[in-house]
Length: 150
Image (cartoon, rainbow, N blue to C red; front, side, top):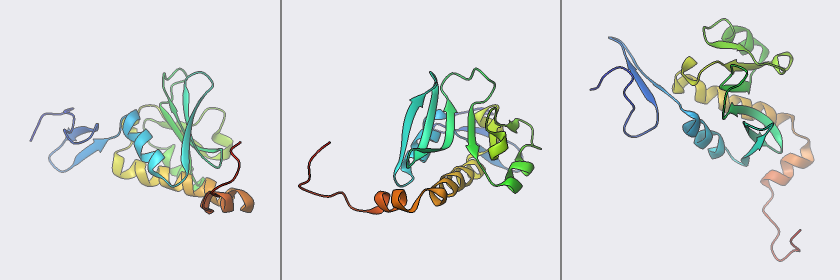
């Protein structure tokens, strides 16, 4: 099959082999592709080197393009999941955002993709549900045709 640390040929994930499981880990590009695949999600570079993933201009995840504060990826989660995740090695309360139940992955390999994707999707969903009704309605409303461009 391959060697430890070998990159999957179909994705930019790293496979770590053990006698029992095969884990694929996401890199920054696969995190980006996944987050942008969520309906109406967009991205924005802010604070010099952070890639924000947003819905309705509200952040649900932040990837560090050049990790300077020891966090490669941070995202929102429930208070219960926050308490569970920060007990794991390589996961810390996100700097500046921990009081809002954001966790920070010290490296992208702290969680395998099968665990990280549902957490990112949940972060997206939590932020979407907190958006004002008018903003949520504008996200699902079809664009008006023939109107003025701003």
